[in-house]
Image (cartoon, rainbow, N blue to C red):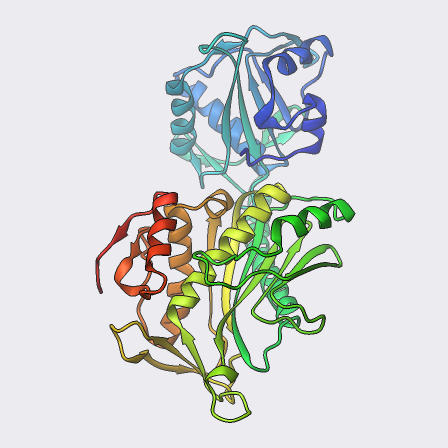
Length: 445
């Protein structure tokens, strides 16, 4: 799926950019479409001379530094920047790889971009190449020129370079954007927490904020589709018998909970926003079920397997919402925390599968722990090792607050440690891993 989503360009081609046909590109000539701030025509491929390589790097960086856009290789323009011919270019996997390598070598930091071949009818080796570059939250991107760095940007149909004060302002905007996404994640997390029944239950909450926001229309049809896709489904990484029971909407968001009650949510909850952001909560301790008498327990005993399983499923759910429903692209800031934890309701981390007796880690936590990461949305939306890696990053960040160095069930390399899953779930773990191409090991720590 292409990271660049542009309503203007999609209207121009009458198609999503990753579904554009050869005829749709060639039609730019008949329509005499002109280059724009987000559209650049090139008659042929970029050459191998130093100046050609710098031109490619500069064009990609300029798009990333401005508003994003599309570079079309194989379309010729006239002096007024109008498309006048569509001779096309030679297509090959080697050329796509060369383009990627040049940008990786000459642009820093490396922006998100896609190289999309558009084949002529019946020809695998001829057509157009589309270089799709979304606006980058990591801007400014620099290009290496004569052992120095320059910062290009689009100015109408041409490329100019940022002045030193403009570079400084761009760096300030980058860091402000990073902080803004972290603040947004904390706000979405608080909003979902307010929906939860925390009297007897403790939850892990996973939140995602896309670097490049998407959008979908929240209407009756969207709610109907959401209900059909959600009710009765178990969202955990490996099913544990808890499913969505009710869906509704809030302002600018779809809502689902794991209980029938219309007040506070039990077991599960999520809020999925129109811009592709979202927050997921899954129960990790039922304090009342483990307490003596009528009152809830005064300590949360967090089960490490359930914690990992919920983070796995939460990341997948949020990634698919961002990518498939809201069409958000690029990377996302993700955050995980455990609530409620207070000085009056502390928490311990526990592993009760026969390898450790009860508590693991030597810390009792009395404030909500949290961990954050930046992950590609595409990696979260598909079951596979990349999703397990992201799960491990967030889980490790949480369990370290308890004095445990890493989560036992998954690794930072994207594998699953089979011995640390309970016997009742092991076959399901093995099946899920096999279906997703995830390596399962007998390693112990």
